[in-house]
Length: 204
Image (cartoon, rainbow, N blue to C red; front, top):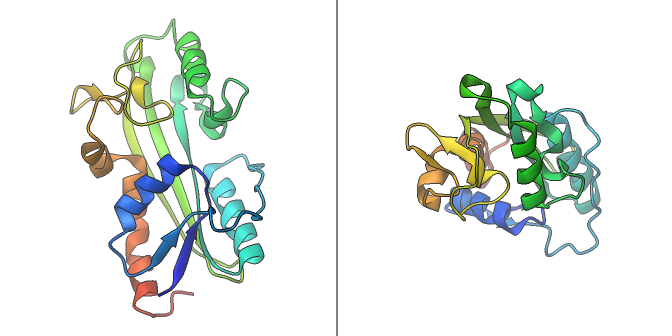
């Protein structure tokens, strides 16, 4: 069975990906079995650029198929911020509460359509030589509410309202979120490529 490594140590992100792709005949794992794998600096100014950096650099080091993924929240009224800085919007990487607090402050004077936002996920698949063989993107559109709602999910989920459900990602059951999230859409695009890989077909 071919091993495909998700280039992340984010357990919540990994669980979401495995839930979406775990039925494939592939050995899916994250970086846990590779304690010496380098931390790839996200120095690109686009999501796809950061995803490609992770995929290609880790592939060259580990000699494995790598999925590099970068995702975040964009608010057009804020010039698409937090954007590629979503995980460190308030300064400290991964501090969800501080990031949420800053977003609420930045949007305090915004109303109506100005509170529109979208989540974006970009995934890049690299072969073991570091060659990019697939690049996909998924988006989920919604609105930023004025206070946290729900305790599920991670990142900006308690603030991200999905209009058709009238609830935030933080309030929606995981199985509902996974049917419509930006990451679900991106990996639905990547799935046909991974299916070919699982069957042993050439995808390069």
